Length: 346
Figure 1 (cartoon, rainbow, N blue to C red):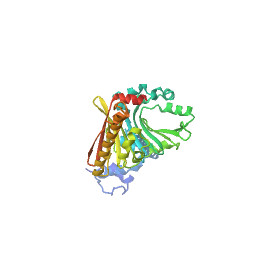
Figure 2: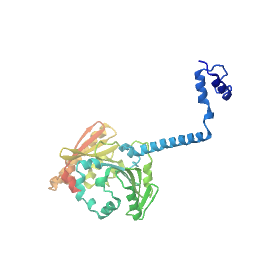
Figure 3: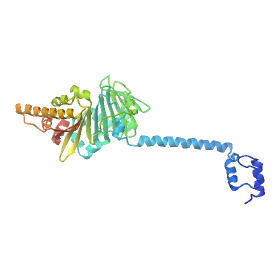
């Protein structure tokens, strides 16, 4: 349909041969739509400024939304492990939520931790009690210090005030204070609102190390509420292990990885050992060595007329059993609740 003369005249006046208008007497409807899209005369300087502000605000909102999403999403154990120094470090994971549901944390009510005067003072001033507020803990006991990622509910304002009362300081997110030893410094910061990075090290800002994520291969992660991964350096030295456990450490010196997990089995608990060896021959030899070490411990108890007591570490270790499958060696020890009570009470 022809365009009305008045509109055609106006179009020719405003876009003389420009923006797709070729001067035909009767431009098409598509041409006219293109003309209005190209018309910047309708966009005033003030409107341009508001459009720019709107665009910047949209970009900022999207960026903040992405940051809030990242800071609020729950990190997996593997995600947290990538923030810890694992070289020659003893890695320990504790699922306090699971232990709380299983009633195990109730065993700590009479332990020395709950009775400690300094700890009670800490709880009172910071409003934080690990038996109620801590959900999980991933710890690395490394040569450079102790590094911890703690998940739970934290009163950050109260924690900062506590640091200040102890002579420490908080700058931005990082809080620092002196430890019990002058060479030890405590530092912590919120990775997320419910995730704390805490370090005890000679480096007064060591907690900052856990703000970085390393893309490296860490130890295998067992499906258990409590587990520990032993580095070869600790296994070889044996100096940080209990006396009764050191006889087993020598058998593990050639292992590629060693993991111990603690699980619930019926009306008792169990410790489960998983060792990965270089080859199947080493695995078979390791199983034989561990079985031999267990038999030697049991014989030593009998020679000293000491009946294996499941409430003592020697009694628990002397009842261990071992199997091997391919390059893997597995160990199993039964742990009674009374043993845990004695261990925690001591």
